[in-house]
Length: 76
Image 1: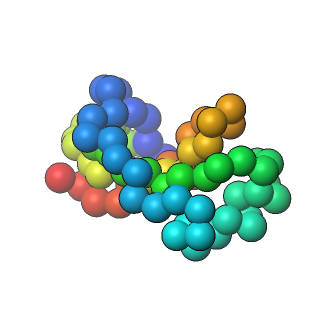
Image 2: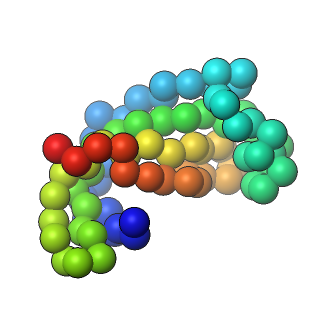
């Protein structure tokens, strides 16, 4: 499902680091070696259909690489 973030991310927190991440080898292979973290936060999003709403988002991020693999975890 494609979406666009239309507000700032709020309530951002790290939920896993290092060996707590289930797919570290995939992240290293695809994006490079770095200290990867799994994070979550909340934002207002716009779906492909044009509908607006708030959602909890999860993604992986690393310094120098940025946010990757952002997905909607649940609609609020």
